Amino acid sequence: MKNFFFIPLQLCIYTVISFTAKAQPSVNNERDNITIDNKKTIKFIEESEKRGGLNRKTSLSKTNKDKTYLNILINDEFSTIENFTCLHFKYAQLLNIEVELITNITLFNEMVKWWGTPYRYGGATANGIDCSAYTSALISQAYGLIIARTSRDQYKDCVKLAKEDILQGDLVFFKTRRGVSHVGLYLGNGYFTHASTSIGVTISNFSESYWSSKYVGSGRINSTTTWQ
Image (cartoon, rainbow, N blue to C red; front, side, top):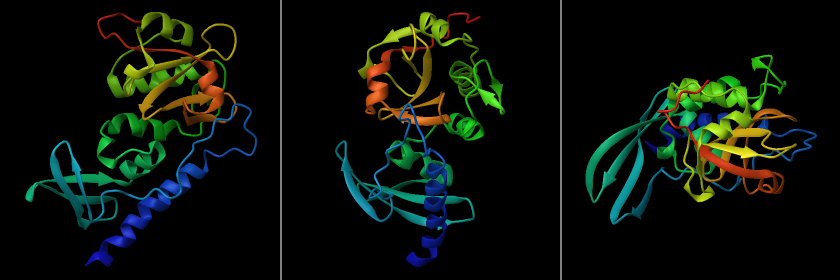
């Protein structure tokens, strides 16, 4: 029975590999690459773990073309069935996090739509987009808010946060030129998505030396504020 689920899971993993391959440029002036541990495997297949005082066990129950269903067993009692798609596995791999933490599907679907779009200053279409237009598009689609158009105004208008307090959906700002000149949207685990001037829409990490040296601050959108 285990062999029955192996092929669909391979398809998800293959999709992840194909997706990440597009993020690796031949020349990358900003060092905007995605560091993925090749030894990382999906953690939820026939695995037991203890988290927060609960003994947890998960295993595959059935699959179809696009979805993988997982049985969730907590403290020896069947609790629920969670439904994960290849999109969940793809971004769990890219962000090096657990599959179940990929919850904002609207956000990640919007990222898929823009992935690889080339950078174009002042652009806001599939032919080219700049960093602040990209974060504006993500915020609009995923959170239903209209935010400022430029990275400098986005930084000015948001509620400032310490780096250790930022959460998925918060904005992260960088000084690549004079003053605040670049913005991305935080995804979790040190990763953020942004429109890179060298390779277009991609995902980067604070641990990369280029971005850690350019980081100037983070902010959270205040939904009570009217953004122009």
